[in-house]
Image 1 (cartoon, helix red, strand yellow):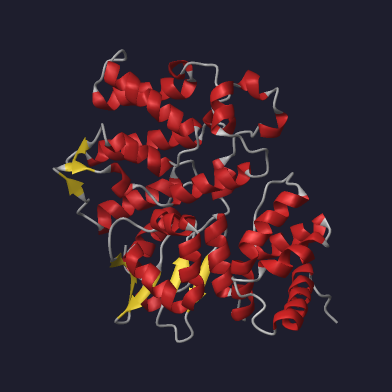
Image 2 (tube, rainbow, N blue to C red; image 1 turned 135 degrees about the horizontal axis):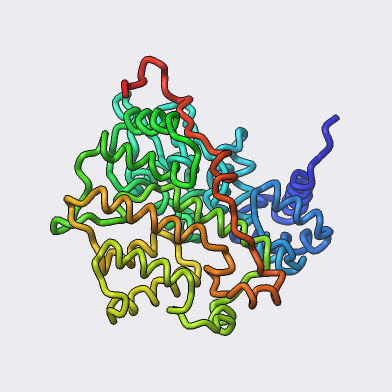
Length: 388
């Protein structure tokens, strides 16, 4: 006989208690916390950690029992009803992974009229329209999700703006584009690529040149964030999730420990060299110093890559005829942003961080991470594949 998991035991316990006391849905959000705290307090910390792990609720590595209970009280009323309502756990899996920036998500509607896919490599939501697969914009996806997951998703959106932000961040910026062309263009291209630090970015460049000729422009200028490969967002979130294992650092602590002047950092020097190369700016230009100082501070304070790109867009935008230059610039910017050790992005010098072992995070080998990722096109029939 299969052994009951800590999560199942916990759910059974709170169900029994609530049914005896309230004689109604034990997970109603209006009163679930009345007995939740009592039960959680009676569990050992390891049991709480196992419950959080099984539901995909992430927390700091050295979190106290009290803080972990506070997290569970907030999230369990959302997670557990989804866990109970969906026998295949797909909706729960979808929601919890959106919340935690991790994993491979699939949701299949019962009649298969709607299919949603989200992968680290090639983040997209797939839908079927008139028998053809397309990628949808965020507004349409949110409407579909509210329908599919009834009130649970609506409630989740209302109580957690991060879900909305994450959805918008992952979805493509191109509008509705043909799914087969998208996946096949990138998949076939990647098969011919050697694994290196930029292969995950080159795929979207190849697609952009071949399948999508019209880059969105404003006043004849290319908007950088319109051609950013969405996997970079997930990669940034991977950095952040990795950092959750260590002590959290506040902005005040970062500023206090950041003894170097911004213009003395290696990140600043690398950015200055890059901008001088592409924008023909003198190294002592006051505007450049101001922009790059602000940009490096944003990187130190944990701004996402897309947020930094949006900041650059305010000051430096390529001409629409300079596509190759734009792509080269972005590739080099990616290297500066993602190849810096995490402690540097948090404003520490190497000497400072040696005194704070709990916050030291070595540089993550992007190759090792990306080597585990592959485009998945198992939802495409062989006869649907397009020629290169």
